[in-house]
Amino acid sequence: MPLNEIAASLYAWDLADEGVDRCLDNLEALAGVNSAYLVGLMHKEKRPLHARFYPHNPVRKYYTPEDSRAYWIPRAEAYPGRIKPMTSSREFLAGTDWLDTLVESARSRGMKTGCEISHTILDAQVAREQYPDVLQRDVFGNSVGTFEAVEAQRALPCLNNPDVQEYLVGLVTDLATNHDIDFIQSCLVMFGSGFRSSNTVSASSKPAGWTAVMAVATGGCFCSSCEAKARAQGLDWEEILRQSRHLAMVSTGRDLEEAHEGALLRESNYSETELLLENDAFAAWLLFRRRSIDDLFRVISEAIHAVRPEVDFRYNTYMSQPELAGLNFRSAFEYVDSVRESDYSDQLGTPEGVAVKRAKLMKARRALGCDKPLLAALGVRPNATPETLRASVKAAVDAGCDGLSLGHYDGATMERLRAVATGMREREALEEDWIHKPGEKATT
Image 1 (cartoon, one colour):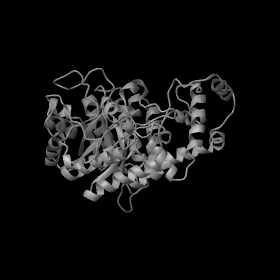
Image 2 (cartoon, rainbow, N blue to C red; image 1 turned 120 degrees about the horizontal axis):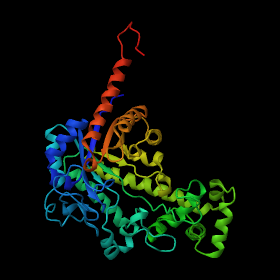
Image 3 (cartoon, rainbow, N blue to C red; image 1 turned 90 degrees about the vertical axis):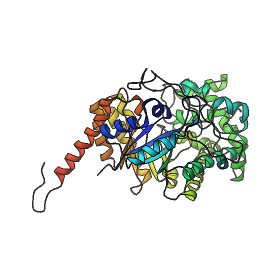
Image 4 (cartoon, rainbow, N blue to C red; image 1 turned 135 degrees about the vertical axis):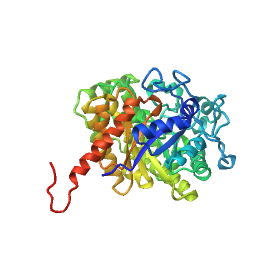
């Protein structure tokens, strides 16, 4: 099966520091890239992510961007609501439409183009100061964060909040209307999963089964927008709150009685099925979250296609257990045009990591069906090896993928980029061995 699209992500500071043509020259010549997209709305995160310093940036050793800035020039008419996109105030980035910069060069090479709306869409400090009412709330009314190591730096908007949905529609409408792109990709953070390695009910840092599901009760969202939507669907909100509060307290051991119950559960053979049957209102809330995400995907898809039907809505996975954040692949993928399975297990540098990637790709392919494109992310960063990258290309083909997507150029070495092209050539050679003329025997 041919891999038709080889995509690569770029950041605005990559383009500013190295130059757009140098970036695309390297990607095209070394890895066979034929599709380039800008991470156009990017959260605060030290770059490169998995190394201390850049391997090839000629200007700086590393970079820490501002939180949740747009790196194109937003059109005011696309944002009639309360929330407006923020752009960079840093001198070397401000005032330039970096998406158009990338698109112009990529189109001259015959490449596909796209833009990604990354994990978070609101500056955390600004959101807490100006839009506290749109933020996700846990069952005790506290603001919900994400990414445990930097939780204090994050602010999650509630995806059921009308102002947030209006803002998201504005973002995708602006991009589809005013830029020559083929796809809009998003790895938007969903509902807070609630999992923390410090949860006392779990015996390990990676709980499974009932422990992980119970921990969701410490996440989100229980805000007024969720309450209004849940009540409109006929759900018993008071019972949802009662059961969720109890499970949250057991999960965290925050009171003596609940800590004792958590200790009993740890030593029992309690199951996930028992948890959901025993807490039917909590189970109904989990289904409510899934319906909310499905509805959000529908709204985004309709907004994009109302402007330009040919632009793909591409979802970029990012969670090992998306169901804990309200995302069900099978139902949500009805509203996407393509999927990027964002697994970077290549970076484990082991055959076991490749096996993890292959399993995730199979899961995504099952949910997506065979009529929509699936791209496998490749972690071309430390600690991936040429061997694991070549094996990952094979795993992508085995899983019925239609393309690859490199993550990310800023941390990639030239050796790893070459390994992608080598892996594709190896697969092409095998496919040629399988094709034989009528009457000839196939080679083994």
